[in-house]
Image 1 (cartoon, rainbow, N blue to C red):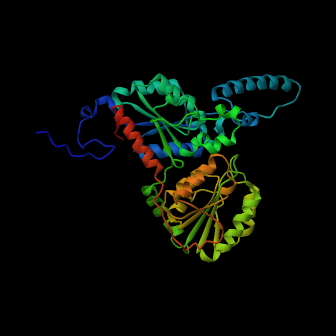
Image 2: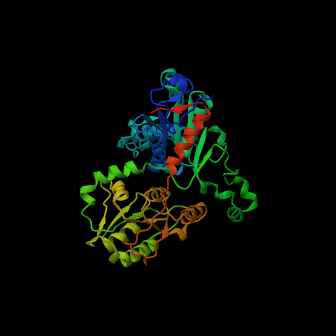
Image 3: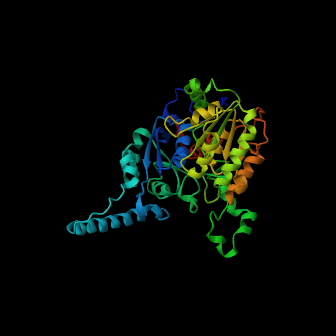
Length: 426
């Protein structure tokens, strides 16, 4: 008679079972490393995944730094390593020139420090491949393999090098499509709309002689995890915590509470004062059905856009416009809002709002091009968003199954590790 085996909870070993029965002492991952690029939108995705895997308190952030300031702002298209070498040469020339000019009674303006050292970024660990590999190997027997999560173009060379040089000690997840050679990573997590260039519609938009240069060139294979939007840190636990933290400020507000998030134009979603005027006109139309409105700008919001909004609603009794000072009420907005209006440029803001299951209206989607069109079509088809026209009754409640990309991606990480004979134990 065969023994009966009861099912186990996903992602966790039976309570009390020694590591030796889990595929070996060396097959249990107990910590994570995040490779960041200094941009909150990218690093938020990595932290969100690590948090969903249970390593919110057991991860270390390393950062790939680029030279900043002056001519460096025009050189971000260069590979990071080459950019740093070029910056070193520029600084050597600058130092020599300063010596010459000082002798003549002249003085050059100082160069900017690298990666914002003056504002505290220097305290973040530099992403050094050899140091991370040494750490992974030296702690392997005690702590098991190392989970590496990276996001953004600047992190690709670091993450792929870790996989190439220490494949037996690390499991490397690259978030956002690396464009080529996906076999450099154990897993790639990227939005479905990153594969828009392979669609017939996209092929029609690209001249035939240029098609081979537009990436990605091949459909996703089995180690590519496709999401609807961006990964993030917003889940039910985070929303409950935010609801408690912001209770004193938000609970007295008249309902329904409409939260408006305004981003900024991008190369694939261009707008300016015209959209700001459209937004303010539509908000005036729905004011009667709102109890209160909270408006937030992002760092990318052009001054001409924010000025129009401030002029229209800066003194309105129903409207509060966040001034950008800490604390940031973003999580409070997600927890307490009844409805959202969000500009079409921000995949991150839309992904977070759609994870709440609350009504989300989008303004400016008709101005988007290329893969952003695919993204917005995907949200519409799933019933996650509706266009904001100004004819809505904001007291109307509609819902949908919340977007759950981060948790689903975390499940795929568990499955991939199990195939390798590894598992997570935070």
